[in-house]
Image (cartoon, rainbow, N blue to C red):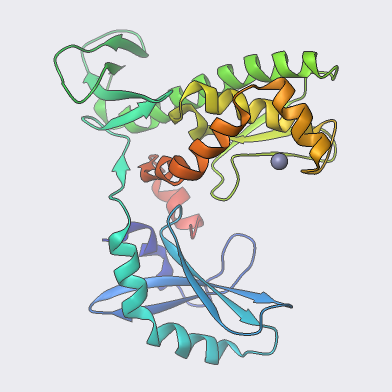
Length: 269
Ligand SMILES: [Zn+2]
């Protein structure tokens, strides 16, 4: 049931950034637990991550991996219970309803149509306000949906980042889209901005706020009062957008993008 754990049967498994992953079992299910050593942790701390649907065990520096494993194994039932309580994931495939710019959107396959991917109003389905129509072979549909969402996300972000950068008297920075799980955006020391493509799922004021937030980091590389003053001057719904992300941000990770089998083998998460 926890699909992303399928790769965890390999021995000596590690995350992409080299952290060890151990696999624990309970009632026929397997759960991956990422091990993080911490210089400041004084006890073992286990948590379940909604975004990645896995568990992280933070251990003090001197705790052995064997001790970490036996601790995680004793907690396997708890991990399973917490994972089962997470909201169901939704594959971005034919028939799925997902929020696009916050608007409920139904994925519709149009195998005989020409063209690529387009949006149109939907009055037939009460659960959606619009349809995302995907032409061509249905086997390519999930990938084309995500490619479309990433393109739209980039377009919205480029527009909003340009507006914010001009108002902050900064050059328009380069933008990279990622599928990050812990941050919606970030700003590198060299002034490049990274964003999660999932922001296209959030209401428009949330995406435009993230653009203003990261542009503000081109001026202040911290979250000081000066930073927040600038951010609020660039985006008047800063507080509302922060509140929205706190309340609903995790839900944006429910929507599963199609990944190729090769990608699935490479990535633990
Ligand atoms: Zn920030």
